[in-house]
Structures are given as structure tokens and as C-alpha cells.
Amino acid sequence: MDESLPSHVATYPIDHVYKHLEKYHGIATHVSSNRLHRIKEENGLAADFDLLFDITGNVFRSDDRTYIGSLTSGGKTGGEG
Image (cartoon, rainbow, N blue to C red; front, top):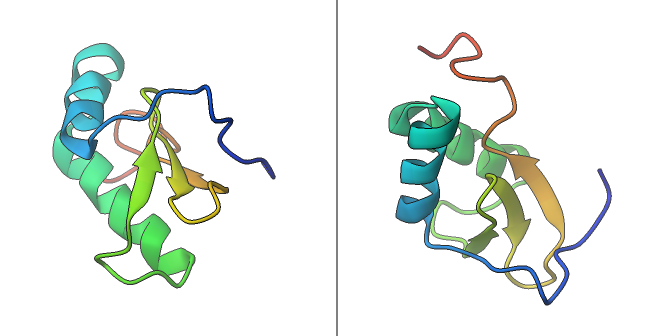
């Protein structure tokens, strides 16, 4: 997926996204958090690098709004249970 976040798409604080993913997709917060850390690491980003999140768990860089990963990739646990 090579795309950027359109300016009209709403972004949400990560805690809101975690709760949404747990309630509607059955993905535990610790699983989403682990995925977020892995996405940052895979993209060579510092732990404190600012990111943007849409409600479905897609992750974008805050500086150029490019897509870098998804918190839903791997399903409910993806072996991370």
C-alpha cells in the first residue's frame, strides 16, 4: 500500500484507536501496542516519533502523512495472543 492520508480523513489519539480495535475487532490493546512498536522499528522511527492513526488502525507518518502499517495486520492475535 503506497498512499498517503488524505487531509479530509479524521485522525484519532492512539488510546481511542486501541479501544475501538478491541471493541469492534477483538484486537487486545497489548497486541495493537506491540504492532505499533514493530511498525516504528521496521520503518526506522524513534519510539517518540509522532504518528497519525485512522479509526481502522492504519498508521501514517505525521510529517508527510505516508502510510507505514496497520494495527489490524495479523488479525485478532497474529500469534501475539
